[in-house]
Image 1: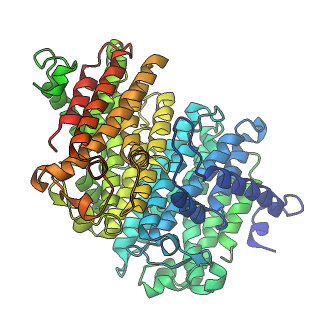
Image 2 (image 1 turned 180 degrees about the vertical axis):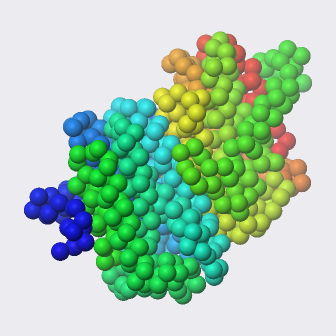
Image 3 (image 1 turned 90 degrees about the vertical axis):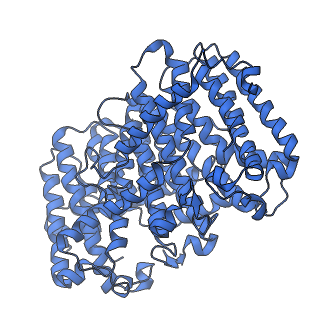
Length: 320
Length: 320
């Protein structure tokens, strides 16, 4: 019995997580593959150069857990369960946009001037495959494409929703979000951080985009204030838990299972939860954050939270 | 007498371009300085790390002609002259957002893996001053900040306008716009391009963002179809003219006047209008494009086009 079953995730016979994820992953992969192309966007006469698009597709397709898109879709389902599929198009655009931001951050993060990593998801990194300039431009173009996806010109997403989604994503990606967290990370190598400094870094670097995924999914519908507050706590808790578990896996998992080079943090003298709290205390901390996320959902007033609960369990109890 | 006076720009006694530009430049500089800061954006509890913000401010402030913001404001004035100042806030947000995209592209373009330039606007480039990783992140964060500026949470810009501005900017910055043009540029070094291939490259690399500046300014108001069509021709013509003149100045101007290293194109075996058409034919081409831009305004049905006319003249007849 998993810890999730102990603390309130419905039994798999009641809610088949694998089937839920499988359907949505297929839809996300299909959408990403359709949208990361050389086709000229509506309103422009030019199409994108083939080599750039090849690097963008290489960075985005055939890999990744798609956790952020799944969070978007789960939060959308929680808020819009009673509203039918009217806003599903918006949620799928949001899901893919968040994944593009995540993908671009990995491309830039792997570059020689940053982490200088050559292996990602079991494949050579983008700059190894397409050169440094190619990786730089592919990342830049993926960030722009995220905002293109949030503003489709075919009437599928109301303009007010487009604006709210752009606002959430821009703030989560920017200097007080993901990019800011990476800057702190970079400046912290080899420095002794306190737990609160480490948490601050991760809340920006990883947490902001994970939390934005939840809030963007919710904003595709019309969440009430109680639901918004609960989802903010949920998003914040699993955002932090994700990083704590990442630090744990860097110590306990093999590169072959991780799909990236294990043990890099210690090698690079990066501060981690494991180096600060120890392995066992880090594992206990991750479980406490899971409980916190699930408790927030209990008080959300939302009826359909099964997918959000299951994803929270997956974040904390994953093996890679 | 300048060529502009010959072909229809109002006399300076009638329209004082320097005063018009001076007022707006001061407002743009003030807005950029207020908005590129470490303040936590509304809805987020974190602020941006100081070192990252320092690199972003270094990249944006105290330099640059601000041509793109001026185009936004001039196009806004052309469309909204009769509507008063109700949409001026939107136009100022749009003006600064476009400039942030331009600034980030320069930061990344100057990096060692791209043009490897050490001098920009008479100062050391961002990666020289803040390191390569610092420049990479500052550029990334500036792109995100552009979309933050387009989606202010204080009610100053209607959500429908926010959505349209984000749509225009994302497409102009992305793989079928600026980033795509840079990818073609990179792949074209040392290759013999035809004039149509060279134009395609520049329409993406520089033209898309200049044209977007014009269209974003217009979209802050409610332009009719005739005005939109005319402004698209105007934007396209001055976008191309800008690059033709850039190529001319790379040959004819000193580094000290340009504020960047002159003669780089020939040194890097980059195809240019001058290398393809010769100097005199390039100069004649730029003048033809100016006439085309001004003619489009004649048929626009817009009353207040004096600033757009004067800026077109400035683009073509500038000395740096």
